[in-house]
Amino acid sequence: MQTSHPYDDLTPETILEAVETTGVRCTGALLALNSYENRVYRVDTEADGFQVAKFYRPARWSDEAILEEHAFTHELAEHEIPVVPPLTHAGRTLHEYRGFRFALFAWRPARMAELNTADDFRVLGRYVGRLHAVGRATRFRHRITLTAANYGEAAVQRLAGCALLPDELRDSFAAITRLVLDRLRDAYPPDAAPTIRLHGDLHLGNVLWGAQGPILVDLDDCLMGPRVQDLWMLLSGERAERERQLEDILSGYTQFASFDSAELALVEPLRTLRLLHYNAWIAARWDDPAFPRSFPWFATGRHWQDLILTLREQLAALDEPPLSWSG
Image (cartoon, rainbow, N blue to C red; front, side, top):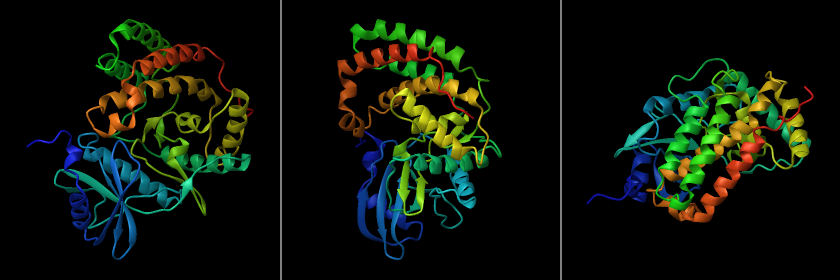
């Protein structure tokens, strides 16, 4: 009998059997960690204590794209940038068991990052600058480049066809997204800024803080894009507060990498693209039972009304002057 979703076959027994195919012996203790796109577990091993097993979503990435992520993470680790590279077993970092591709990682206990002081922002800025100094050395061959087309136009197409979009809101949604996409094509053309290898999804949820400082995790969305993509999501609050945070981050960042202030004009286009992409991601994953459980609000008319309102606000934000930086 066919199951409703591929992850239904990823039972605790399958997880432990998969890990043990790498030569690692498990005690049987298993803890599911917070993850939606993939399935991630902390497993207890007999010889090395806790390890993390990440099972990649079927059909989401090619083997080449995953291996490129692994190679980039190892490259960063070799330059002493605080990431958690996949472990190598029998010369490989990517493994397969019963149709599931997976990788193992060391367990790094740490707390969620909180940027409370100017020095916290400067420290994190230094690490992002070092990451970008490595990222600019070469290019990805098998991972996407962040553009208005693949993050915006594709997302709007997905959302417009979503059965959860109420019929009475379809015309309003089509009208605002048409205006937003037209504006994005002007504000974020393909040649808007040089592209380098990036973390790609660098928000505070993907920054842990350990005894030695920040740890940058979850590089499975690494891509080619403008440098500011790895900076703007670290900013929060009103405009004046975000500009102070930006000053502190870039004071650390520019110790290791250059930054062109012209890229600050891309912050609101990138924010708009992320809004569209995030909603389209949920729509695309709605057949995964974990998504209706975790995002029940996505199926409500109120959410779609709020999304249309937010897009109208973003359309206005696209015409505001960019954040300023004294550098």
